[in-house]
Image (cartoon, rainbow, N blue to C red; front, side, top):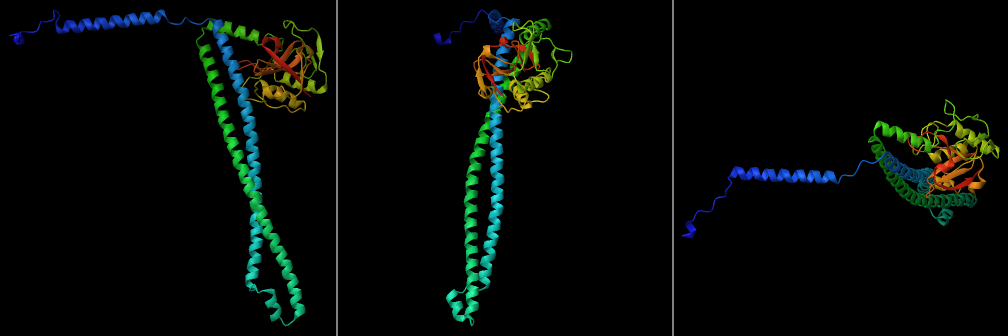
Length: 369
């Protein structure tokens, strides 16, 4: 019967089948490996790494200025909240004083029995004495009414202060959340840049640093201590011969501009640190803010607010002390010193230095002071 036939045996035994399967899997894995290797991205060149790192630094600077703006708003909201809280505490103290006075009056009335004035007149044996006491009672009533009014006034003021405080606290929490977001953006972009740079060989890193130094104006003439060729306190600025700018000394237009330049010169060589405003480190807008503060002029914190802090001037009208801005998003600023050059805090790893203004896309200029 067909049902009793033996099934046909495989020409390969069990061990042979397993061996064949293993070889097939290994072959497939090898093929996949070679296929993946064949499509792997080529190692980026130094120029490509530099371009990507530059984009990351630019993005980090945009995030830094947003962080600076959020921090400025958070500081303002915190100060306003603290003022409201202090005012509410003072009002509460006055409220308690008014309540105590009102309570004392009520207690005095209770002790006197609180008789109706007409009844007191009937019961008194001396009408003149009654009238004198009635006048005093009327004055006491006036004081009591005033105390009640004071309590009501303080209660109303405290309610308003608490409502304002709640609004300021909500705004403060929103600014603090924005601070955290922008900080994460800055830290992330800088970490990615460091990772890219760490992949370079020593030779590639040397080429990168040389190109970055040339771009950032590191070749500008300076003393051994990082100061420029001219005196830190002098309003005269000499153009670097490699900048392609004007030659000879350039004089600051006024004492304040000279003071701002003098301060900026004294910061040459100090490190760039995002969010820093001195005195040991700066970011770009922190440096310009500190320089003009030393000259007696208060500037806002960020690049995109500093550009509106004075009179706009064209590139052809630049004078020493002007603020010069770069990139379409107004994310970088330097202090113009004449001769086509500026003092600025370039980026992480590049200290405060003198550089030509044509090293970055020029976006505008503002004259302050």
